[in-house]
Length: 275
Image (cartoon, rainbow, N blue to C red; front, side, top):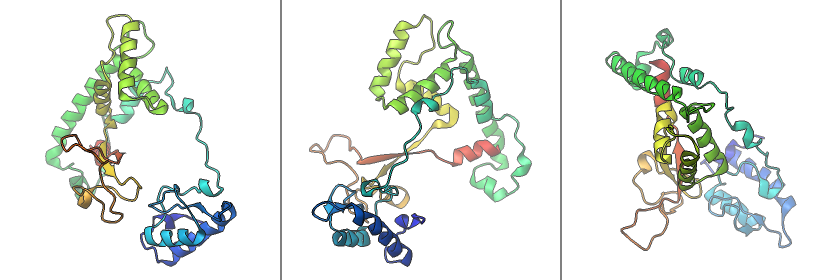
């Protein structure tokens, strides 16, 4: 059975009612000695234990956590991801081919016939020449960096090395400070002169030119909403009334959001496809 009902805001719809009953058919087989189980509502988040009756009330009032679509606290098995090693780019990967795929130089515009679509993307006739110059300059910059050796005699370019290192950072959950330390060690050990970036900030800035930039959007800590568009300037989300920022005793300190979503904007990627 599809679990799209989990994301249904109409908590009194027939689909939602059938959905939560299918959940209880699973959950009732995994109760503890007190006849309780983890409650998956947006507020309890499987942290608190409740009876079936209380869970039913919570799910009708607050809805099920939208991230809980595999019921691992109620007997289901979570599909294990493949080894992270398979995600690492091979050392002999052709960075020039990657760049050419990312920034095609001669694109057929005949496939884009809807003028309103082009205008919405900012691809009207007035924008085309300027945008082409910007993309061409970006391409040439990346190609120049791609040809630079990571260090004298290395097997790969600085660009390929940074892509591999950033991939390792994500897969191994290395902090920004830890990444800076790793770059310092590489710079100390590798022959001079070399093209090793000085910091995570410098590396991230370089990779943004590849189209890997992102936007940060504050999120409710229960994953029920984003502080975005009409909710962008709110300090509390109207649905669950949870605070946007973590509690702080100092008014001068920078506010720290409860949770942050990193969003890869679609519009710039469409613009590059149709220029």
